[in-house]
Amino acid sequence: MSIIPSAVLTTTQIIGGLVASAKNALDLAKASSDHALKGAISELYDSMLDVKGRVLDLDEENRALRVALDEKGKYVGPVTPHGYYFQAGDNEHPLCPRCFQEKPQRIAFMTEPENWNNGVRRKCKLCGNYIYEKPMVLNSVGRHPTNGGSWMV
Ligand SMILES: [Zn+2]
Image (cartoon, rainbow, N blue to C red):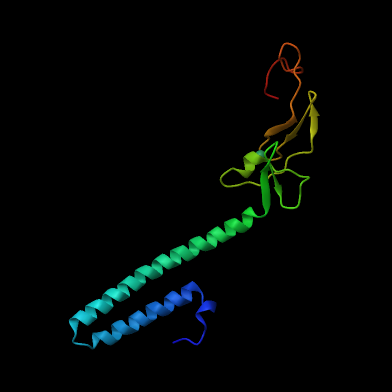
């Protein structure tokens, strides 16, 4: 029996202690002539090994989720009306929503606002995605005023 309070033991230490106890019981039972007892303790030991594997998997999954949760707290968004993400505490420098939602995620800043055809846009410094914060104003025939009608700018 350990003198360390169980609250300060890690999950791995606790399960390791349980498996060691089960192994000890298994070793003691080997000297017994009671076959039912041997079988029951052997089964208990095997089950403990299964539980250990499952607990270690869950422990690793939990650790990964904590890392992801910490990472999520570093950013805010999507923020209306343009869907930008921001680093927590920085409302001045938007991040590209397309890059932010990529798998794997990329953190990319947008350029400063740029006047464009009577609208205002920013461009992602990484993927080149444009976001119009104020729409372009097209001429009377509905064509792009500067490049003969193409929407590809
Ligand atoms: Zn981007």
